[in-house]
Length: 264
Image (tube, rainbow, N blue to C red; front, side, top):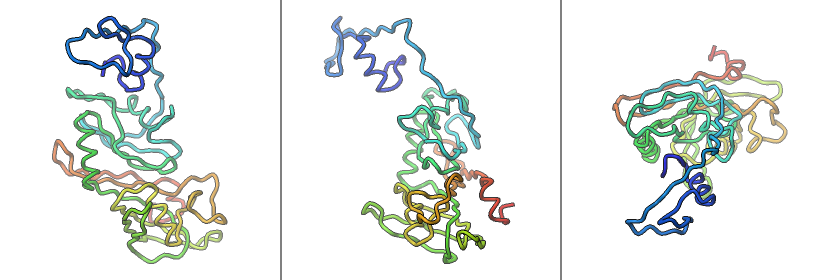
């Protein structure tokens, strides 16, 4: 990919605007390259620079290969939107000095409303290596949630999601009575698979939806305007290049601490 057009969509736009020619003929996405052709790239002087999102992020760990950041609630990790974590990374992370440095990219996702720890690759080789760790389930992820209703002290949920097997382990650390909700629980969660909305669906399936969950919660117990009480608390994995075991935690949000005194 040409340096002037770092993304596939930008490259396609360049084709549409006649910026690229092959043997003096205007190129299209259907142009076939046999080898030996003369390819010319013309970039107009008035090509506007890409707009950058200015959004301050908390960096929990960073080296030349990767970074770990705190994701606030109410923002997408990536996607076809301007305000995303992916678009904010360049302003918050140091550029890697390594030869295969690239625009930093998140290597996994958190839901729009979920807060917590997010792993980012800063080089091409690191992004590939971190994706492989997730594929091999070599990254241990721990979440905490506030759930509604009476719960067993611990358990394992194996309800299928989208006809695919999955597993979430849970442990209740503290329960408090609530006038509105009956009981609220501070629950540690370990997803052993990575299905979409897995923890939210699993907890709802056993009758203990997450506080603030408008999609899988009980309609009569929806908490409006307070966000989703689901927090990605920690990641543990072996650094693919330094081979050091990294265990990185992201402190509990204030709304968790207001409910459970063991977090103070």
